[in-house]
Length: 485
Image 1: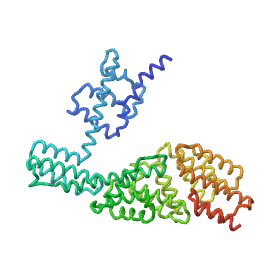
Image 2: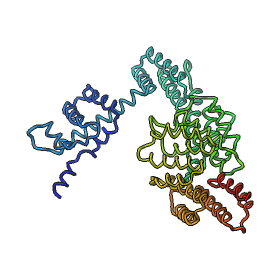
Image 3: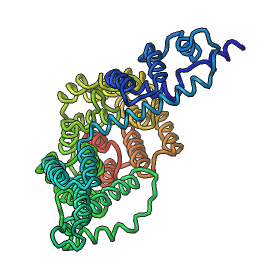
Image 4: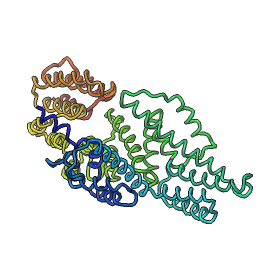
């Protein structure tokens, strides 16, 4: 027991410095090695320490890897001192964070230009300051973005110019850019606030969240004031916010979509993700009423997000967005696209999520082909990672047992599904109601299918057409089948 405790205590793999080094890519580790041995680091002892750690890249899992082993390599013949390893680890950790800051700064061209501009300002060098200010403005104008960051950065440059020239021209007779700075500040502020409120109302709609948004009406008054210039970025965030509030309609949806199509490149990927997610959610909600045909639009939005790289990160794709794109293709009857998508993107799923989501996708394909036994085979292989997988799988189990007329299993899964909805606290009432309505109508249809003539298929059809619920298109198809029997 004593030996086990000693081994655990001497383990170094979960220390802060090792966890940080594990975050570095192969290229970053090589770059950091140069940084450690550069003039940026004047602690040679820390460089030697890093070189010993480097021998255990990238996983730090070798049997010899421990604090005592590293100490022995650095100080042969000396007794182990834990405080020395702690000090070296701390200093290397600080150096690693300095490298991260340096790396991020090196990749941010605007910040470099701005810092140089501030240097010339502090040195009161008129020639170099004017040249750098002019070049920095030109640099910003050449960038495709015209979002809040653009206006904020332009305001920074203009503010630097205002401060610099005020030292020579306090009364601003020769130089005055106050009006431009007012415009830039309003643009940045209003766009940033519209973006923040848009995110807040979206969270309140789909999750159990409550935020204070009392000032939203005042913000919209400012936006709609004739004195506020409605730039493209401001319009986009305004439409997106309206799509989540009192303008949740097709007119707003198409206004936002057309604006984004006509102005490619002016927003960052993060911003575009927010816009398209809002449109995706609107179409999902709209499609809950079968009279609203949204399948083609939903498919187009999903494909657009994929084409723009909004739902992939490097060589990976999240399970939920994989499922979204795949299901939109199935719903739009784009079966060939769904098959190609599954083949091309399944290996981009994380290893932890891949088996579940791929088995679910194959189950959907077999469901579309009416191969119900194969559907059950794929569903039986799924081991749940999250509540959304549970909802999808329970939903499909109900449909397949309905199709196969497995009464005992149909009612068993119905009861299990209801317990899941009742006990799951992370899912809000809106989402629960969508699935509860599906369960209710599925049960009614199953009873009719098995001889209960007290229930009218026409009444059920009317309920499906007027009540938001999951699986409504499938329910309508089953209703029509019963009407014709």
